Amino acid sequence: MRDVYATTRRVAVSNASVLLLGETGTGKELIAKAIHQLSPRGSGPFVRVNCGALSESLLESELFGHVRGSFTGAVANRAGRFEAAHTGTIFLDEINSTTPKLQVKLLRVLQEREFERVGDTETIRVDTRVIAASNRDLLDEVARERFREDLYYRLNVVPIHLPPLRSRRDDIPALVSHFLEHYNRENDRYVVHIQKDALEALVKYHWPGNVRELQNVVERCVVMAPGDELTLDLLPPVIRGDRTPAIAIPGRGGDLDSLARELVEQGLTTAAPDDDALFERIVSRVERELIAQMLAACNGVQLKAAARLGINRNTLRKKLQEHGLEETADS
Image (tube, rainbow, N blue to C red; front, side, top):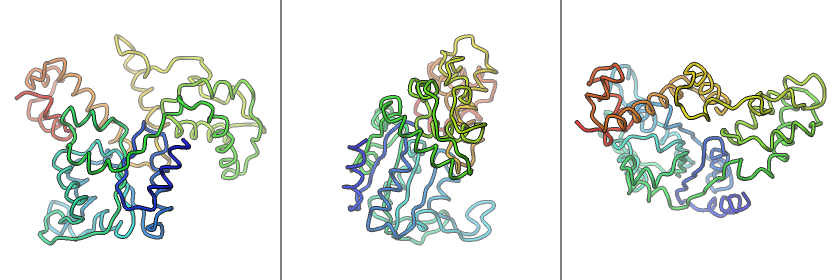
């Protein structure tokens, strides 16, 4: 993490594109904000876009804007997030979720600093720094032809890898103290002591949701604590070691209801407080994984996969396009 902080300070003074890599919840947005605030653009806007929360058409409009009449519901001209971030920084979170079509447009903005709104022919120029983040290995996505190689190298000017919390367990006590102080102040509470058994459980837990999950757990403890101590019984059962999370169990013959419940709990626990569109985000990921695995089981044959899924072939093709899985399927 000292290397991460040092790189953050060095890169902040430049205009170079930055690629933040790490699992969900490792603090990629916080690093992006730090780069922005420490840069000469710090007084300008910082605009965050979650690329994984919107469909291709909505994301294109969100990024580049649109003109009246360009599609159903476009009743007025609307500026996009790139325009809103002019003279500042735009943070493209989960950029690995973008489709090949949108990646072409992003490459042009990075190279030429210009674009057109959806449905318009007028070229708009912007002075915007781009910081992107991915919770997947983008080089692996390039190898699988899910992400454009030229865009990857354009984004990967300065890569910063954020380690998962389980690989830096020595940081957990300090993080717990920090979050206790923060949520005590926010909730007018006085939880200032940590039971030894509780701290040991927090350090031993594998933290699939990383720092964000730890933050949410500490907030819950502060709110629920009857006294001034964070005790073991305040922690969720999975952290106390009472049960193994169903999401970590290989899905062979398990209870699907339990698996679904655990998946949703994990999605909500690791979500940032200001995350929106959680329904689409969680359901979309499950749908993508289901389709990808079914295609693999059917050797990429769409007709067979559609039959197994219980949907028609046209619906499957549409979903393949939405999730960027066209390359994994045969016609």
